[in-house]
Picture 1 (cartoon, rainbow, N blue to C red):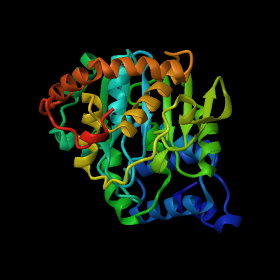
Picture 2: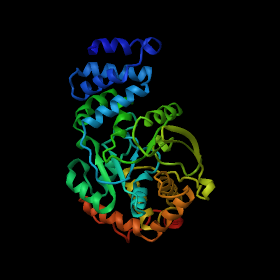
Picture 3: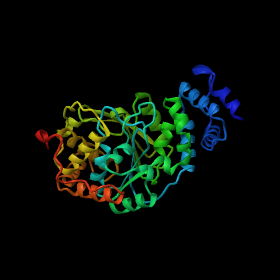
Picture 4: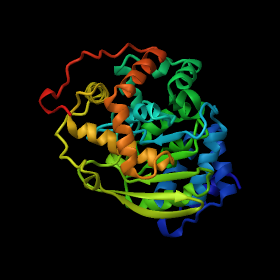
Length: 358
């Protein structure tokens, strides 16, 4: 079936269109990634899929096509992949960034990944935040990234450097300006063949579908998190809905920060890249605002539990608190920044929240 026929099948409107089989969707995905169809046909397909909503088989096919076109490594054993939104943040703290170093200090390797900002949100992404730390991911040497990962347990992957088709498709995605199936697929590249996953979603409708999608992959345990701005970060001021995916089964759970005496109101912040890195480093240094300290502890503790390194979320939080308070996580972060070609963070830096430090 050629692309014109495919477009007729998926482009008949929400009621008249039909879902593609896995095999059909895989052919389409590979042709799009290899740019063997025109930009107009690619745009039409992505719009039609958005209107009818992608089914599990179609999303699975795009994930496999993206994985097949990317460089993927086995740097870690039994690591955790943190899959946050590539369109970034505009209203919330990137707790996943400092939490990664707490987890690595606790012995759980972590893979972070992202790109320059994308639509529809055009928010602050990890790539932009890292630039504030002196690490330009657009010029990052892959071997340096692997070496930093081996020495610290934290790996950052710049997706468009490790998956060339995503870079080539960026202009089209920017011009379209809306979420497509690629927004889901790029988060599931699994660059490090991780055993565990936390995956962020925004809408309730995606919770169940992504949970079903994750049963198709070989994670030992995965969690779909309806977190802040569609991220994998749990809220600190209210409960967060999560789907646990394990052994082909899914179950809905609720993670409530008040259960662990960590719930706090969130300060009103203008979340620029500069503020993101200042808050993250203040938490790791030990002089951060208590809300953000608690948020890092909740997320790190939950992930330690999700990866089977703690018997409960409470035990995970207690373990992570020790590595944060001892300075082990901050020392690891300093080492990582230097290994990645950035500057050594200043331990003597003044917290931007001196009156509310934890």
